[in-house]
Length: 144
Ligand SMILES: [Zn+2]
Image (cartoon, rainbow, N blue to C red; front, side, top):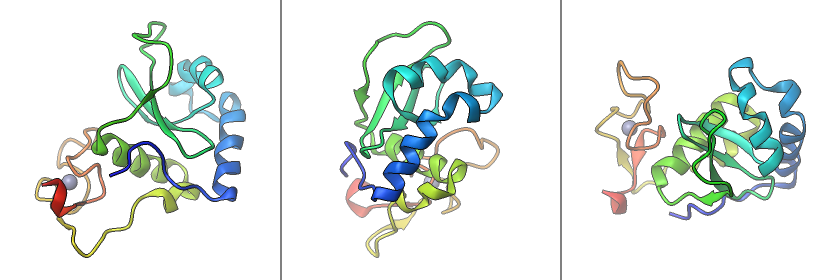
């Protein structure tokens, strides 16, 4: 799986750029601490974690950055290597921004239902955890 970037249409690229530009005024109060990071990295956060946040650039590149309150373990954007993080970010992004739904990969006929979440994409009693399938509810045969 290509975890470097996803294909974005011109419309989606403009949507992402607009959300980045407007992040300071649009972001939920609980994510206000991310604003300086968003301004610095020009990235739209999709999956906000305790120490790292995964986001998308207007170009479609998927990157992560360290944002642990006022502390950061590293400064620059880093590539995302784990497919589960990429999928988790795209799934969460589609929930927060319906305009980004098209970025979630479609289930291929070779995929099998995720046995951890039973295809729901959510781990029962642990809605905040990312399932092994990244939240799509299926896994590719080759990834098993
Ligand atoms: Zn699952």
